[in-house]
Structures are given as C-alpha cells and as structure tokens.
Image (tube, rainbow, N blue to C red; front, side, top):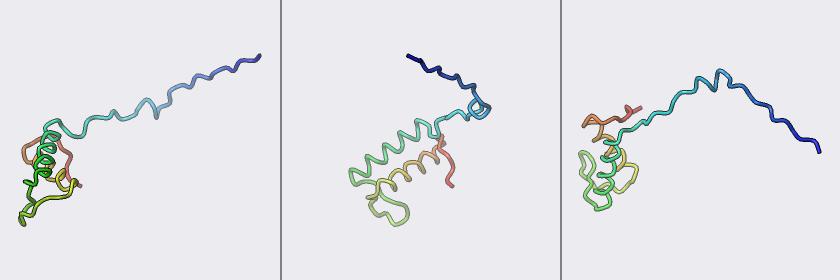
Length: 79
C-alpha cells in the first residue's frame, strides 16, 4: 500500500495581510434596535413627520439605528 504525502502550503502574502474583522455596530446600537422592534410589535412605533404606524421590520431597524446614531453609539455612517 502506498500512502499519500500531504504538501504543506506556505502562507502567502495575501493570507498574512488579511484585514481583521471588527464589530461594525456597538452593543448600544443593538439595544436601541431591540427597543424599537418591541415598540413596533406592540404597535407603538410611529414614523417621522407623518406619524403613521410602522409595520415593516426593516423600517423599525432603520429607525433604531438612526436613534442610536443620534445618541452617539457606534454605528457606521449612512451610504
């Protein structure tokens, strides 16, 4: 029986200089989004000027992140 030899690959420059993944959102931002989601589920969350009830999950998250941004939490800027 012949056994196969495994070749050991050397780390290339691309692998060694990989960017470290940091958290994009802080814990305060997560708490704010959670709070807004609860409000939406209870039917208490209202949107901007019109004051209409928010029904979309995505919209509730956007409102939560916006509020967190205003309070100074770690949230990336809008594109």
